[in-house]
Image: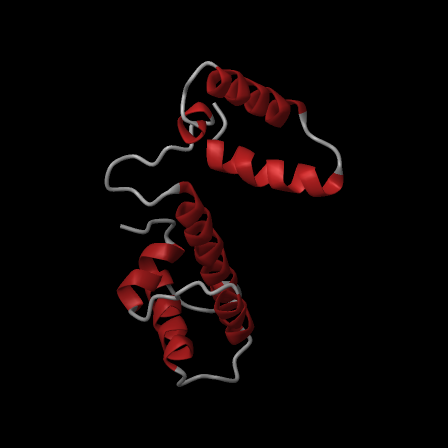
Length: 130
């Protein structure tokens, strides 16, 4: 099954482009049917947050932030831990003239908080957030 958050992102693109992929249309139609049968909309679209998890909007923003962090690390030499250390210096302002700063500035424009610790940056680079 496709991730409902991915379908939601693709729905947003579809609404702008005017073309909706069939799987997005099926997901949306099924969700609307469940909603009309009495389910809350977030549950009908499978977007209801699990207890202790961020809501879908926050999950999308975290995924955007994490992707910007990973883009910032592309091209950096060294191990993932060393890359995280380099990004930590950029985030702290020690290396303000680096290419990586442009991705982190984009996160600022999107009002996404970038973690400041090497350990958290390392987790993001490894595809984890825990």
